[in-house]
Image (cartoon, rainbow, N blue to C red; front, top):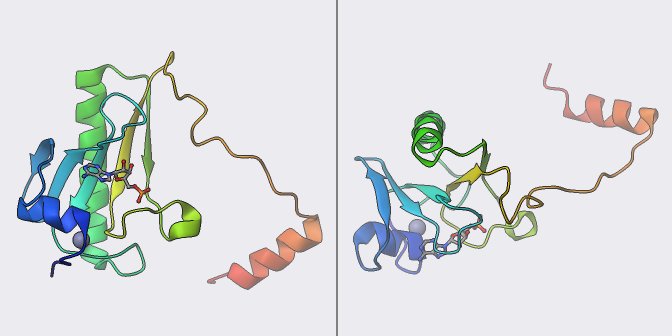
Length: 139
Ligand code: AMP
Ligand code: ZN
């Protein structure tokens, strides 16, 4: 399924150009047009899923396997010093393109953007943490 209004579907259809570093039947991996670092890439499933809630479980599992493979390959080629994988869901979480994607972000010791992905902390009491734990427990 594709979404005619989706920019990533348009890339996958070939209607919009991209710098593609990997492609198979299920995925296309492109360089981010606004990279946080050298080599910043995006894993796009060829099917349109808006986010993690909607993606097929098997495709999600394959995407993570591909992320691992590409992280190793990109680290070797780019000689980067670390690596983030990141996946945003919903506007409040920073998602701007509503077609599931995994960011592959190589990190460098002297990188310009080394403060990205650092956040401040929210405080909870021990009682609050226990209540949250109970609320979330799947056991
Ligand atoms: P997110 O904010 O997690 O939804 O990430 C969307 C990413 O897509 C951003 O990092 C954008 O720079 C990137 N992006 C948007 N349009 C394009 C495009 N045409 N080609 C490559 N990357 C894009
Ligand atoms: Zn799409």
